[in-house]
Amino acid sequence: MPTKDNYLGYMTADLKRYVGEWVAICNGKVVSHDPSFKKAYIEAKRQCPAKRPLLTRVPDQDTMIF
Amino acid sequence: MNFKYKSLPRKDGPARKTPTIPVTFIGPGESIDIVAILDSGADISVLPLEVGEQLGLDLTKKRGPCGGIGGEVDTAEDYVRVRIAQGHENYTFDIPVKVVLDLKSSVPVLIGREGFFEEFEITFDERRERISLKKVAQR
Image (cartoon, rainbow over all chains, first blue to last red; front, side):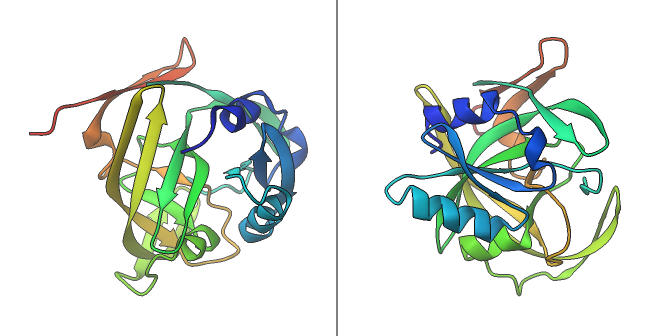
């Protein structure tokens, strides 16, 4: 399950710079970001090989809501 | 379990307080921690293509168009296991998900009603900017 550190990192992060991108948080900090989920995820796993990153997509104006 | 709304920026617009929850998606291939938008207006949960692929979901089942605010997209439907936890509470169960098959779609990870909202009594407290999930006993 998501660690407390990562969730707190997400709740306190200023995500303004990452609109339209996937953001990966590890050890409570943003460690990678990319429009592609896979690129953000793989880079986070590379930087934190023994940890589970927490990922989220920062919406933009084109975000499709069902 | 209580989760505070998160202020999320939007391009060319003000940030919006958004009800999000941390969820572990457990697929046949991998399990991934993701912050999802809890969407009471969505009939079913939605995943972008790259997430569905990384989880190892079967993207050949129940393929067809699906409509929402913003247009219509092709989707495939499968089940995925989700785990949601906070403090001493920890719940794991399967939900149906539609995977949007268009790689260019900007859909976020949405938790919709089917399979999820039956598990909890859910309160969206706009004034306090928080979501409350209270597990309900299974019938």
